[in-house]
Image (cartoon, rainbow, N blue to C red; front, side, top):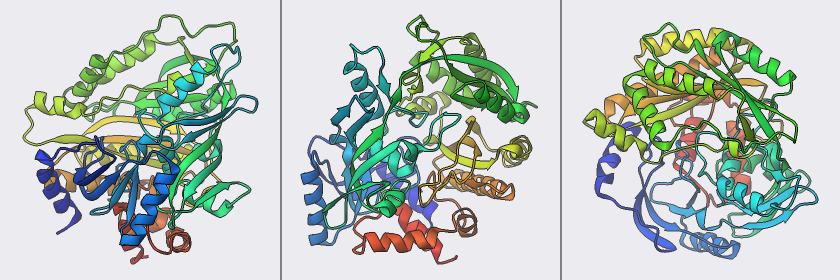
Length: 491
C-alpha cells in the first residue's frame, strides 16, 4: 500500500475517533496535524510531562521497553515530523512556564511547550511599569499556537526584512538525550548539537527549555501599496534601506485572471518615534470576516482578493506594536464550515509548501509558477512572498542564502485522486525552484522525490550519520525521519 492510500484509509478510520487529554497519559489514540489534516497517525501512548524530571523518566522508560518517541507541541507541523506510527508521543504543551526573565540583559528562559501569545503577554505584564520594554524578535506567521520548542525544531522565520531564521534569536537551550540525561547547548557549549537540534525536526532529543534573546519593543507604521511580483523584491529592499524592519507581499490567487501571482499587496513596517502611540483605534478583520474570506478564496477568488486588498489599503499608516502585530487570527477546524457550505462529498483542507529562489529571479519564477499551477489546475487559496537572511549556524539550513521565500496554500480534498494530484503539483513546484537554483522547505510534506531531496539538501546522509552519533539507540524517531532514511537509499 502506498503512502497516499495509507493516509486515505487512516483518514476514514479517524472519523469516529476522539482524542482526550484529560489524563497525563493517553493510550492508543489517533492524532493529526491541525492544518492539512493529512497526517492521521495511530500512536501507542501520549505523555504530557510537566517537568524535566518527568520528561527524563519517560525517555528512560521508553529505553527499558525499547519504544521510540516523537515530540509534538502545537501540532501544526505537516510533514510527519511530530508523529510516529505506533510510537510514543510526548506532548510538550504542559511544560509551559516562564523560568526566568533577565531584564538587565534582555534574555528570557522558557519551557519549550510555551506558546508565543503566552510569552508575549508575560513580557507585557511583567514590564507594566517600564517605559522601555523587551519583547520577542520574531515568530512564525499564520498561526500563534505553536510551541517555542517546535519553533526551534523547525527553525522558523517570520516577516523580518533583515532577519535570519529563529536560530539567530537563541542564546541557549536544554535538551533531553536518548538516555534521559540533559545537555545545555549554545554557541560555546555542545556547539555541534546546537547546530543539529535547531532545524533538526526533533530527532536528536527533546528540547525542554530555551533561552531567547529579546529586542526592544517599538512602534511600527504600516505602509501598504499595490505592487507587481516583478517589483516586489526591489520594493521590499528599498523599504528596508529606508528603515523598514518587517514586510511581505501577498499575491492574487485567481488563476482565471491575468493578475494571478503577478499582482498583490505589499506591506512594510517601519519604526516610528516613541511619542507616537500604537493604541489608537485600528481597522481589524473580525474572526467571522476571516472565515468569510477563507470561504470566498474557495469560491470567488477575485472577490476574496479584492476585499483583502481594499482592507489592507485602508490600514495604510496604522500603528502597531512590534510584537503583537506578529500575532494572527487562525481558526482551528475552519475547513469544516467551508466543507459544509460547499456541500463537499469529503473533507478538505489546505496543504502548504514554501519555496526559495534567488531574489533577482522572483519575477520570472512567479510567471513560470503561474503557468505551472494553471496547467495543473491547482486550487491556490493563499500565497505570500517574504525575504530571509542567510542562516550560517544550523547543519540542515534551508536559508542557505538571502532567498525570496514563496509560500503556497493549495486546497486538497481528502480522497486518493486529489492527494495524488496535489503531491504532483508540489513536486513540479520543487523542480521549478531547483531550476532557478533554489530549494523547498523540507518538512511541509513528504512528497519530494529522492533526487529533489538530494539536490536541495545534499548533507542529508551526514545528517543521518550524526543522528546515529547522538542517538545511538534511535530513541527519537518520526514518520518524517523514516521517509528521510528511505529516501537516502536512492542518493
